[in-house]
Every structure is written in C-alpha cells, then in structure tokens.
Image 1 (cartoon, rainbow, N blue to C red):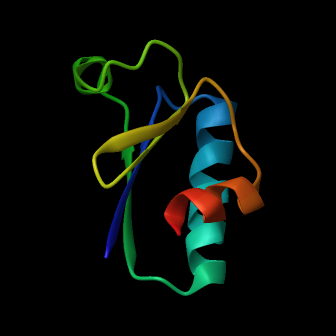
Image 2 (image 1 turned 90 degrees about the vertical axis):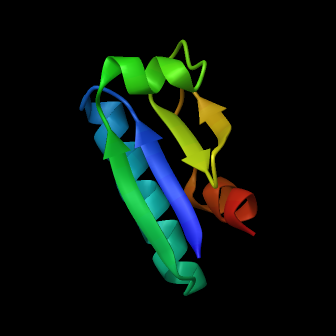
Length: 77
C-alpha cells in the first residue's frame, strides 16, 4: 500500500496536486492512502520550502509544482 501525502496550506495548487495524485493512483488501481498535511510544523519537518509538495512512502518526490498525472504515475510505480 502506498502512503501518499500532499503538503500544503490548502491553496489552489495544493488542491490540484491532491486531485492529481488521487486520480493517478486510481488509474493505476493500487492500494493507497491519501492525506493532506496543512500543519506548517509538519510540512517543515519534511524539509519542504515550497508547497505544494508530494510525499510518497515518506520521501519527498515533488516540491513547488503540480506534476502531470503521468508524472505522478511514474513516481508511484
């Protein structure tokens, strides 16, 4: 099971990243959990300086942008 976290304060880009990650995981038919992390201290604990950020299984994969669905699929594979 993949543990997916979207780090961000809830801005439009953060929402877009959460939707993109959710759609990518569904299209791949993988088991996953998706969590939106909005607490600034929690976000900083990942060393992220720019949001939104995508964390997969505890590792920051993308920060400061919203990747395409295809790019997220590659990160989930």
